[in-house]
Every structure is written in C-alpha cells, then in structure tokens.
Length: 467
Image 1 (cartoon, rainbow, N blue to C red):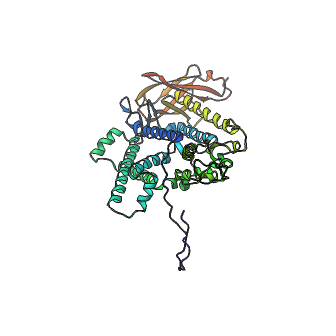
Image 2: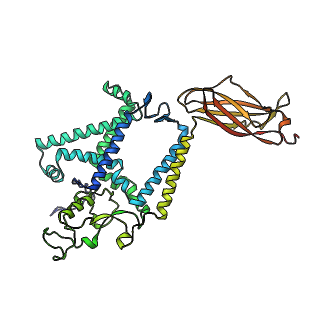
Image 3: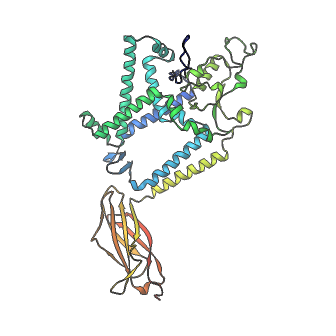
C-alpha cells in the first residue's frame, strides 16, 4: 500500500486511505511453472469442454433447474438426493484440510479458480503488453494512440474470454447447443442474459483487476489456514542460514571473501510473486504457494553456479535439522475421513435406486376393526420416481399370513420426478396376530424393470390380549 503523506507547506492531515499499488508479476519458467501451466490447461479445458459432451440424447453434465433434474453422465439426481451433495461437501472440506496439512496453500497456488483465471488473464496481458518491465513502462507513459490501442486490444480480448466463460457457465444449466442457437438469434431468456453478463463481468473484474486482492482481502481461507498448519506442514521457505547476509556480487567473486551468503539480492523472487510479498521475510498469510519464487531463484542459482533450493519447500522442523514427517496423526485422520467419505458416497451411488418410498401411519387411529372382524391399519405411502421415465408399480405387503391389501387407486403410476401420495389399507385376521406390534414389509417394484424396486419396513398394530 502507498504510504500516507502530506505535501510540503500544507496543513492537510495525512491521508487515511491509499489506493492499492498494481502488482506486475514477472513471467517465470521452471518445474513448478510447468506443473502450474499443465494444471491451468487441464482445469480450463475441462471447464470449457465438458458442457459440449453428450450422453445419449442429452448433455453429459446438465443441471436442469426448471425440471429439478441434475444429470451427471448416466445418473440423474433430484432435490431429494441432497444427501449426496452433503457428502460431497464433506469430501471437499476433508480434501482441503488434508492437502493444507500436508503442503500448505497448494490449492490456492494451483487449483483455485481465482488463480487459474488470473493466470490466463496474465498470459493474455503479457502477449499484448510484454513482460513486467514493458508493462510498467507502458503504464507510466502518457496516453497516446499506441497506448490506447494496446490497452483497448487487451480489454477486448479479456472481455471476449470472460464472455465465453460466462456463456459456458450458463451452459451447465441450459443445454449449451440450444443456448448457442438462442445466442446467435439474440433470443435468450432474461435470466440467461443476466447470468452470462454477471459471470462475464465477475471474471473480467476478478481476474483482470482485483487479482491478488481477492486472495488477500476477500478469501476467508487465507485467514484461517494457519489453524491447519503445524511444524510438519510443507511451506515455501527461504534458507536464511545459507542466504544471509545477502548482497550483489559478480559471478566470478567468491561470496565468502565478501562475507555474503548465497542470496544476491536480485529481488526476482519478489517480482514473480503474484501477491507481491518477499518470501525472504518468512512465511506470510499472503503466500499462495504458487512456487514461482522457487523457480526463479533456482534459475538464478544455476546462473551463479550455486547449489539450488535456496528457496524451497520445507517444514519448520526440517529447518531445525529434523526429518520431514508427512504421516502424522492429523494427516492420517484427515486421510481416513476423506477415503471413508469417498467410499461411502461411491457405494451409496452404486446401490442407488431411482425409487423412494416413505411410509406414514394414519395418525387418526392406531388400528380399527372392520365389519368383517378384521384388524385394519391405514398407511400413506409417499412414492418418488427419480428415474427419467414414468413407471407403473406393483405393491406387495408381507410379514403376516393372510394379509389383505386395499388401494384406492386402480393402478400405481408415477411420472418421472413426480411424488405420489398413496393411501393403503392393510387388513389382517386377528387370529394371526401373536403380539400387539408386528413387522410388515412393503415391497414396491416397477412392472417394466425388475431392477427398480424398494423395500421398506413398518409396524402393524393390533389390540392386546387377542390370544
């Protein structure tokens, strides 16, 4: 931040607010930069390509909000399947805790959407304006035709990229092929126009202007990450014992003769940092673990014929001479919960039946005796067809010999995504009741597909002292 100052000879009070200084990250090349580039290409490629993939006659992944259907490959989920979404959130949280405990803010540096789209915008900016020195020179120059042309070109490309990002986002909720045709004919709905515009402007603003400010001031993760750190968490660290005292020197000079460490104080580690921090001052919450400082420092060490890894991944304990301990209790607990949640979700989805039945007893009376002398219990079955097709079902009730089942409807037919309340009367000869409460099994099966069925258990109540 710029420091607040007073003009000479002025009685004005110091400024209470100063605008954020723009950060110009320098391009960097190296192993971690390569991994980060691969990650960006994979994530952006997945985001932009997936909506165009088809599964049969529909889009492979489509969140159809108007019809309350969420299609993921061959599976269709409904609002009643919120349980799976809850488990998915637990998996995401445990994954974040696990990777943070192991390697700090590696999510922020390689996978966070803010980082991914900022990297894409920075690449466009460098292609048009040049690297850091050229960008600084251009911004400091006075406005002229050349500067207006360069800035206008950059923002046009930025907006086009952001616009396609917003269009793709809406393509996850509206079939993207239909969305494309509607867009070409300017025949989109109000909400489609709104979300394309909103998401496009949000991408343009966050990745083009706010950038590191989102990480520093808006993202809560930066504030509570330290809770998940311990002495064995891998973080980006500067080796002070080896690097200090820092100072410039020629390649041919021996730093020991000048009383210097390995750091030549080139400040390139600061220039490549997307948040503008100096890693040599120690670990800071602003560090997003992008590893750019490691790559650029290793390049400098290579040119100076010094040993690499002056800046490296290390732990607090390893800096004190202890070995790096990855498999510690905290990590093992996170891993166990994460693996258990993934297995549970996978088994739940694998054994998922596109049919749901809830049994509610008639609250007006526990039971009653019919004119024929039978004991009757009345239930309301809430049936939900979670398949993409309509089905007709057959209901069987088991558990007591000689059961009579009466259904008010001639047929049990439920349309796709529909919920049906079905009144069912179960009558039993009192001679067959051995106790006051007896278990019953309701078995509901689709007539056209024997694999679609559900079994639920309830209780049949009768008077005491029958036998």
